[in-house]
Image: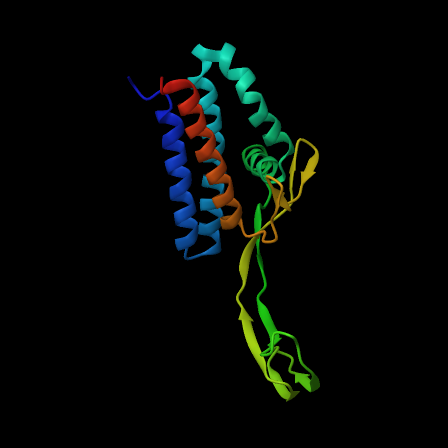
Length: 195
């Protein structure tokens, strides 16, 4: 039996390669290009599942309904589709570089006391007296931006499948989205093509 979902799986592989490339990107421009590639491949994977299931449409479409509803309601899935559509049909930024900074944490996790602190114009600590602290350097990093699609704004997701998302880093969003679509295609294969 031939693999009816081979084209969808090829797009999943390409989406995984885009995520890997995002992790290895040497410039912001390359990173953003890989993010755009990911968005395109993940949407193509979905569309190619639908095309592969045309011969079994009568049973597939009702089954697929719960996943279509998730794509409309789940914040991550809705955002990934909107970002892909915005990239395809408009000219807008999908990501930006969030500036880095410096954080201060007390060595004692229960907290401590700062007697005096003087910070210079470049963020360096000029003078500090108080309980011991750790200085944490926070590097600049990419974050997903709100996107406009068909006149509607879509914010980076705050949740996925009922779980909170606190980090708007595109690589984190891509990994969660990729996992969802991998599981979806595996379920399609088990349900319709492994008999």
